[in-house]
Length: 232
Image (spheres, rainbow, N blue to C red):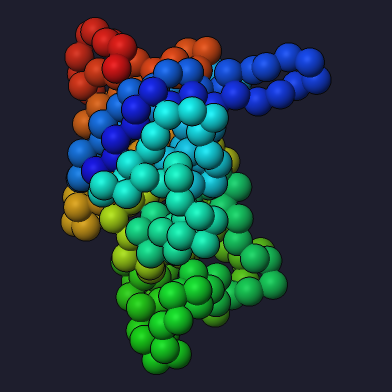
């Protein structure tokens, strides 16, 4: 479970102080699916980076399963990301010179998983996203949807409890977007993941259990299907 208390992230732009995230208080229970919407530049990606330990709050605390991520040493945060948090990005972030299998397997190297176990878990992860027959293909030999499936397999091969997805369908056509969202929903249900997904697409956000809206760094959240958005 995530618990954010009075989280603020400020950036300096010249002489100006810009609040990317302002006084956010939020709880994300285990197994929740929270979709985060809002206009560009209003703090969505910053919030996701804070949840993933890729950035640190200027003030406030971020707890994951009782651990204060915001006050961990960098080595501790790196270990937490390697074991408990999977990331999926809009641009896939695959290594172009590595095969699909090698891209997935690379996520296990920091965990010091043995060679045979790495290969077993890599094959299992690719199978779970329907890409067993593309394991030896380079990213350039895969479609956009297939590349995103590899990226999802790479995130899940670590067997994380949390999956953070930043516009995971943003570079895909309409039909492929639906395929990827159906896959993410299936994996969320089957694995009991805590899923936080940033999206501009209202139709995608409505699939989540709850929807949060970022506006000038502030957060408001509601249950999916609810007409009201209440500050949190």
